[in-house]
Image 1 (tube, helix red, strand yellow):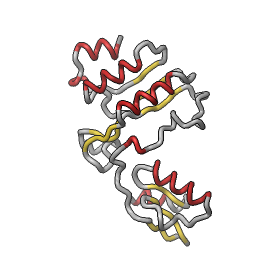
Image 2 (cartoon, one colour; image 1 turned 45 degrees about the horizontal axis):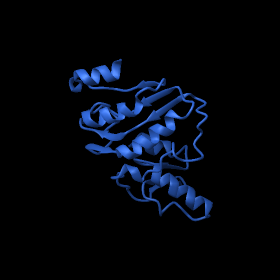
Image 3 (cartoon, one colour; image 1 turned 180 degrees about the vertical axis):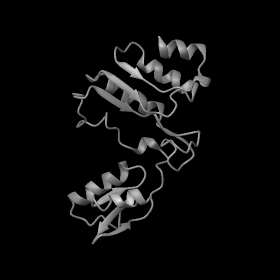
Length: 178
C-alpha cells in the first residue's frame, strides 16, 4: 500500500507478508557479505530513493518449517516481560474487512499438535506468568482445542484466549473458564 511504501522512505528495507523465512535469509546473506536485495523474495528495499521489490513471497504452507523460538537455545527463557504471545495457527475462516488475521489468504494453516506440544512444554517450564494465544478463534477446531487445553492442565500460569461463543459447548466452557 502507499503507506507501506512511504515507510520505506524512512527505513532501508521491509518485508511483505510472513517475515520469518526472509529475515533468516537476510541475516545469512549479511553475515556472508552477500548482496541480498534482489535474491530474497518478499523483501522491499530502497536504492537511491527508488523502492524496489525482490519478488513476491508465497505464504508458508507448512508452518512447522518455521523454527520455534521456544525450542531455540538462545530463547530468553528468563521471560523478563513475563508474557508469551503464542499462535497455534494462522489465518481465519472469516474475511472481515477490518481484521488483520486474514491478511490476503483465505482459510487457516496450522502448526502440528506435536509442534505445539513441544512449544508449550518449553513455555510452561519457563518463568513466564502469562500465555496469550493470539489465534483469531482459539476454539475453531474443538478436537484441537481440547488437545491444547489438556497440555495446559494444571498450570498456574494465566492463559488468555479469544473464543467464538457460538462454537462453545458445555465441556469447553468448563475447561476454558474454570
